Image (cartoon, rainbow, N blue to C red; front, side, top):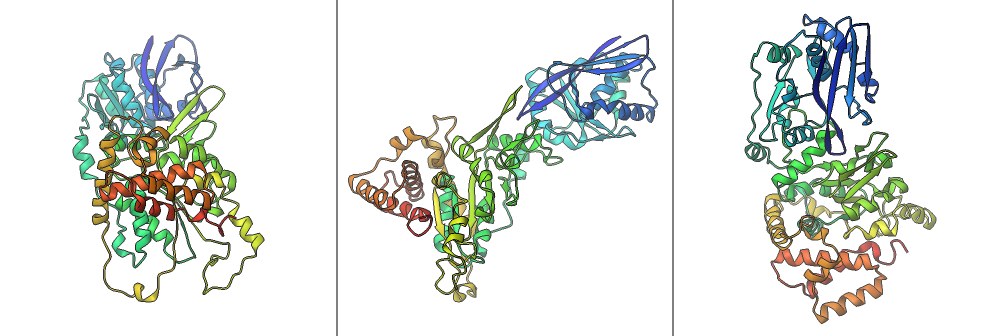
Length: 511
């Protein structure tokens, strides 16, 4: 007897429906075809034990299971429940009249309890698109899948519940979530606050500009100057995610199984990988591509502490994603694209010893060591970082000052107002939402300079020997500074402030 059950395979951040055809016939044998990986091939042992421990069995007949489309690679243990229900229905151990109206996924333990799966949100989106009535999956993933409306989502703990649902008509408890309510409930802010930072007013100003325009930023200064402390507080002043951004971000984290029990992500991601990271772990990849750190920080912040300690080839692979805001991973048989629109925040010491340019500290690094240290960061990568700022140690009188600084809430209010201006400006564009994303045409339209500002920028370009890309970056940053002031046009003060934030282009750094 032939029965069809439906599961799903995730590629990139999109799902593809998999039809599991189970045919039971006279004879002996268990044949699983349709490009399954080892985890799926081993599933018959898990299924056999789970069924036996719940009063059922794999029949002693010839069972042929085809996972269609047969040329699409299937991987992972999430098909256990799909295969088990298919075997029971095909061998007439249960009635399953409504089987084809549901998409079923879940990994089985030997006692029949279900373990969580990866990619529940993209699978639920695809199930709704293809007109399935409901989605049956492990309870830990139910909140995440229930974000999708017009789809009945049933979170279950044991295979027995699914068997009784199809065979005896026992109802399953539907997971219902009000997406907007859930989003607003999770919308709190990180514990780190800018009011904890003593002094560093110019750096706070830089952080505010970076947050307002979504600009990449690099902090350069000696050990203990507060670079990491400032970077960790950046998410606290970023504007809250929109519902669309939250769905996009949750989808990526769902693919790697990081959203169990959390439902919709409302916090902007803050990723801080160690400098020993490989280029595949950073941009994504592997034989069956998974998203890397740059995609996991989509709509959030990627913080690279001690930038020159990262391998040069690891930093170079970021150049294209920084520009295109997506990363495409190609394999012989397929290509996947992951979004990667993130804010890059990097920090570094000015020299291997850490105290170059500090008049009170001895110079412990030779010129050759300095050159080797700084050459890890290429010119093209620095060009893609809009704001370079030097962080100096805080003097004792400011450290011991009891007065509290401006809070993150106050800064975030100004940042959100500036972002609102940008949202209106780019309302007609699907891909550009804030100043850092502007393309050349939009820069020409929205960053118009008067003659005095043009002359000022021309002088800076010639003196600092800036590239065309650095020119565009200065215009983008000056547009953000104008937005923070609520100014319609860019003036000379905006341009001169933006030029100050190109420290690494000046003589004495990489020259």
